Structure formats: C-alpha cells, structure tokens
Image: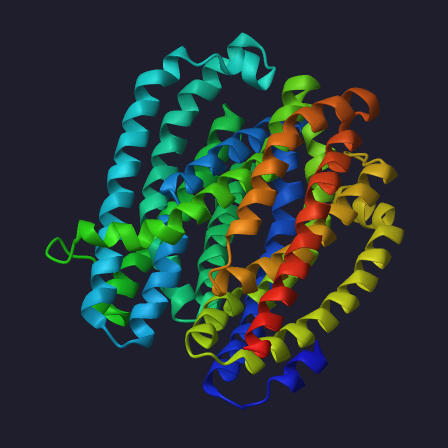
Amino acid sequence: MISYIKSIRKKDDRSTIALLNVIMSFIIKGISILVSLVLVPLTLHFLDTYEYGLWLTISSILLWIDYFDIGLGNGLRNKLSEALVAKDMELAKEYVSTTFFVLLVIATCLFGLFVLVNQWIDWGSILNIPHAIAIRVANLLIFVFLCVTVSFVLKIVTYVYFVKQLPVVNGFIYLLSQLLSLFFVFLLAKSNVDARLEWVAYSYSASTTVVLLLFYPITFCVKYKELAPSIKAINMNRMGGLMDIGFKFFLIQLSSLVIYTTSNLIISNKLSPEEVTPYSISFRYFNIIFMVFTIIVSPMWSAVNEAYNREEYDWIKRTMKTLNRVLMVLAVVVLFMILFSDIVYRLWLGTSVIVPFDLTVLLATYVFLLTISSLYSNFLNGMNRLNIQLYTLVIAGIVFIPLSILLLEVMGVSGVALALCIVTLPGAIINIFQYRKVIGVYYRN
C-alpha cells in the first residue's frame, strides 16, 4: 500500500484525485468494516441463526432489483464522463435527466407488479420455510420492496460521484446507511418487540433509503446544480447512446447476479435457512479483502475512461503495474486470514456459529479470484471493452446454478463455494489476457 501511494505522487490531477480518494476511502471503509463486524453478532443475537439466515437469503434476492436498470447506470457512468471531458454540460444534463426518468418508470412498474403478484408467490417453497413464516415474509416484503425501489431511483447520485472520481462519497453514503442500521438494531436489541424478523428487515432497508433521500438534494441542489435532472432535459434520443454500452453492462450484471447472489437461495432451498449463516459469516470475513481492494480500484474506472479518451496509455499501464503489486500483498494477507480463521470466528461470534475449514478455504479462494477479476474488469470497463467479459460471464451464469446444486449434493455448503471458484477462475484469466492484448495493440499503433 505504501508503494502504491508513493507511485502516484502528484504527477497529474487524475493521480492526485485517485490518491486522495484512496486515503479517504481507507478511513471511511475501515470504519464501515468495523460497523459491519459489529452488526453481524448484534443482529444474530437479536434474531436466531435460522431467522438470520432467512433474512440474508431475502436480502440477496432483493439485490436483483438493483440490476433491473438494464445497464443504464453504468452506461451513464461512461457517457457522462465523455460529455464532461468534452465540456458539453447540456449533453451531460440530458444524460442524467433521461436516465433518472427511465429509472423512475422502471421502479414504478416493478413495485406495482410486485404488489400484484406477491400474494401468489409461494415463498414457503422458494425459501424452504413453514407456511406461517412464509406469510410473514410476504407481508414484510411490501415495505422492504418499496424502500428498495425508491433507492433504485435515488442511486443515480452514486454514478455522478463515480464520474466525478469521488467514490469516497459513495463510501460515506454506505457508511451512514450502516450506522443507521446499527442504531436501529441496537435499539431493537434493547427492546422486547415481537416480530423480530420484520423489524430487522424494516431497519436495514429503510436505512439506505433515508441516506439517499438526504444526499439527493445535496448532490443536485447544492453540489452539481448543472447536472440536476429536469423534465425539460429529458431526451429519449439519448437512450441509444446509453443503451449501446449500457445493455452490455446489463447482461454482464445479470450474469454476475446469477453467480454472486443465488448462493444463499440455493442453500436455503436445498438445505435450510440456518445453513446460510456459516456460509455468509465466512464470506463476510474474506470479503473484507475485496472491500479493501475496491477502495483502491473504485476511482480507476472513471479515471481509466478519461485517460482512454485522451489516449494517455502510459498512465493506464503504470497504474495497473502498481495495483498488481497490491494484489501480491493481499494474497499474503488472505493466507494469514485462513490460518487464523478459527480464532477470529470465535472472538467475533463465540460458539454460536461453526464454520467448516474447507468452506473457509474455498470462500477465501473465491474472493481472491473475484478480486483479481474485478481489477482487470474495471480497467476494461473504462476502455469500453466489454464483449469478451459478456460472453464469459453469461456462460458462467448458465453453468453456476446446475453446478452448485450438483456439488452441494456431494459436498454440502462447501460445494456451492467450490462452484463459485470454478466459474470465476476462467473469467479472471481471460480478463488478464484481454487487458494485455488491448494495451499491446495501443502501443503497437
């Protein structure tokens, strides 16, 4: 990490912004990780292992809503960056306004459709839970779904901060959401309320919505008035530009979603919600590595896009070389995390949850493979090189569900983790080779 900071001394504005983002993000993300670590045992104590696993499964299903933007968010991320580089503020405002309008229409349709079909969904069969609990789940999901769809629209502010190369602000938004959740769950833990699953669901889902409601006026009424969505600036002709690259992002997101969020549902459906808990605990432990690396990589997408549009390929190559050194350091950290995992689990959660060692090793491997892949995919996304990522992720998404079910029958929960490793490895390798090929072509030209 020290070598990384030294390597991006104030050579240019882009590197300076990236450096400042990394430093501030480490502070914010460090607090966020601590809050997350406190939230797990506090929520687990308030609920029981079964209900906690059930909530984790429900929340993973709700993540699907975030990906129904049909790629508009990431399409906006690249197109808005191009408009700002060209200093075309009218075009930039049109991109933001059009995206906001379409997201609002999608969210309204999704919520209306869910209210209509919710009573007909057999949550008992899907989640492998008793009928009485299934009725409670159906009822709590109305409010939770409303919060998620409102956040779905308001999250447009996060794309603006990404384009402005200020992912640190998005980290702060996430931290405030976590702190608010912690506050609510702490109050619940001190009370004697019934319907505990419902109150946890309300607390977690409302926290994100409240924080985004706060940041929307800060972003568009104070900080970036020139980009504020307006009815007059809606131009549906801009959808072609947004969707040209955005739809590819959507297919990539959808495939990633199948791989990364169906694990809890498969475990709950085939085994029990209770079995989701040790899987989730181990994943959260090693996901700290991915979160730390994301702090460094987050500014790179928009920075690489800017460098790519200005044909500054030397900067891209230097930055990638430095980040590969960071990956080597993280590999050593992951090894030590595996070796001391049992001690950490006991200190963190006591004896309430037992995590098998083979599950720990496999999830550590998966998270590190995902970290490698995300580094190269961020750079490729910034250079608008999406086709090969798209093909590999679609194939991985198709293979993952049957493979994970097959391995689960043989190995239990660890089989799902092994399936994640198997489908993630080819994508990581292909991303590395594609990046090297793209950079090589630019230098030959």
